[in-house]
Length: 91
Image (cartoon, rainbow, N blue to C red; front, side, top):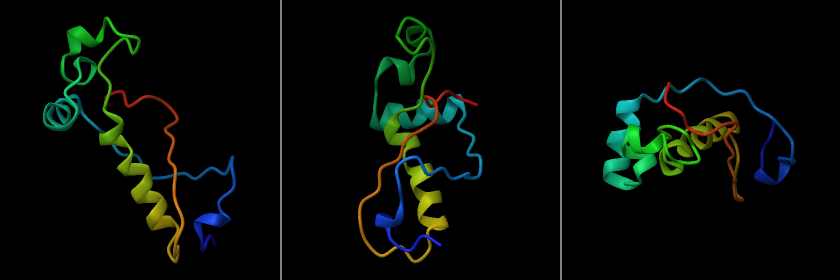
């Protein structure tokens, strides 16, 4: 069992429950907290490097963080860094 964030090693992988984020979720969140065209306007997002609507990192980062905290019960201190396997595309 992982008791401390210091017990985590680079390259460790964890499977967490799927969290579905809809287009509506992406746009609603972005309009309030991160109003970039690739988060709020599907047509404009097609002309960006992302080639389509993408969720804000501010929107998606809490999901793996929350699952990591639930999975690592007993973690007492330290810092955490999360990375997503792919951009936050809807669906």
